[in-house]
Image (tube, rainbow, N blue to C red; front, top):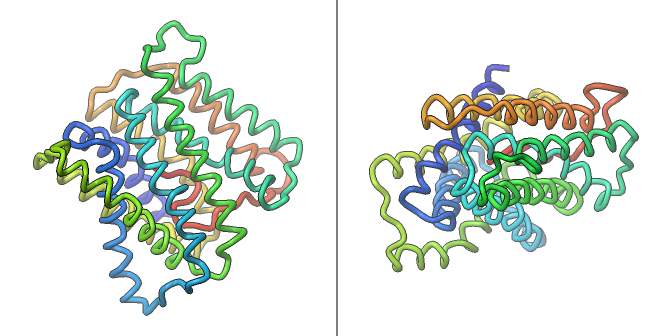
Length: 300
């Protein structure tokens, strides 16, 4: 359990790191930097553990996963946090298991039981509450930012189901390495353009946050979750879903001075209830929702 709390602490602070980095770099460079730094950590892990590179037949699928689970979500969350608070982004990102359940039904043929269907509906109701849909305090730019973070969760959810269908022959470490390598290559030209165009001017604080976000929040966190999945199983590993928003909301309010919102708390509780229903934690036996990759139920 200590490893689980450490993982939640790392991922929870990642939303704050993103907010700081965006002051000095665009979302595209932020995404490439964290993927590349995370890849560097996994390269060391691959060498130490003697893991072989994924076979050639998997690389087209790893390219899809790199796009769906790294490139697009990291850019969408970065863009979203330009318009909404880090605390709000973390709660919205917690809806990832809802998308995972839906894509599991579509791609893997897994049947959702009535409580799970109710959970999906309840979860997205919570997302609407958190995003302020219908509320008078919704700023003009907040809804697009919120939708961007929700779409990032959809990318993660698709990736979980896709990986279960097409990459079952890979270890979690091979899968993570291949995904990050593909993401690094895909975003490298865009990051180079950002640098040449002068859109990147990392100060010491932003540079430190990028290193922490990439090396810890993307690379080391993969390894932590990988070990949790191995030793405790997906059920325990998925508990991080409920812990990350708590850390992120506290960090955003206490460190960045983000405003406290009762709507954020209430909507977050509704999202958590929906996720609990989907994962079978409230009623009936659990029907597994795909969580094969180390960046499990919630990520940033």
